[in-house]
Image (tube, rainbow, N blue to C red):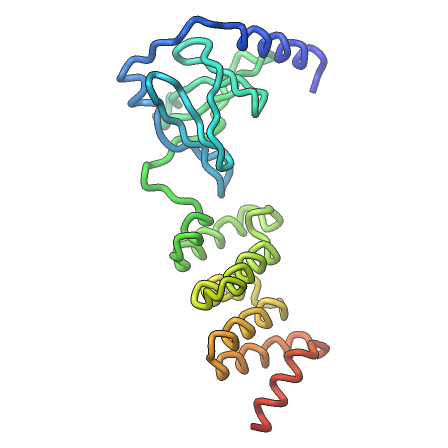
Amino acid sequence: MKLKTITTLTLLTLFCFNCTTPVEYSEEFKKQTAGKYLYNPDELILVYYQNNTLKLNWKGGEIVPVALAENEFFVPDMYKKFQFVTHPETNKKYLSTFNDEKDSISYDYVKVDEDYKTPSQYLEAGNYDKALHGFIELKKQDSTGSYINEWHFNRIGYQHLQNEEYHKAIGVFQLNVKLYPESSNVYDSLAEAYLRGGDSLQAYNNYKIALQINPRNTRAEHYVKTYREE
């Protein structure tokens, strides 16, 4: 970040926290701007108003921005100044960041429908089909993103196992298998979930696949051998 930008933002922050003039939002403005904005493919910014105070919910926490004007506010948590804009061609609404070095408007975070859910929200709600569809699309866009990671889903699945939520664990591990079908680990995890949930046949089927992919998977090898002997 350039020195000029840092200085500008620092002065803006000091100005904001010393600003005591409240901003009056019109009902039409609140209606047009409140809602969900897509921060990244798997994360939302929620904009809403309480007692004429603009608020954001981002990364699970409530933020009260510093209102500078009806359509201008500063968010210290992000160290950015924002405005609401409408794209002249698509008519879509955006949350736009101010750029002190450019006169053009940026269309950063598009506003989405109220019933919009991210893939992670579908996953949390147990809607594994829609979650899978969403994550497949995200993987096409960016297969290395933190929100589309084999080990991330594995951790979620094992959290359900620890809580003895076997159905949920199986749902998450099945999703992981479909996203990463060439990984021995995802089949191994799914097999364990089936085994702990009482389905020894499905445990065997998935341990067998895990062993085919990775012949050095000793746990899978032991279970497959024991199951066949029985």
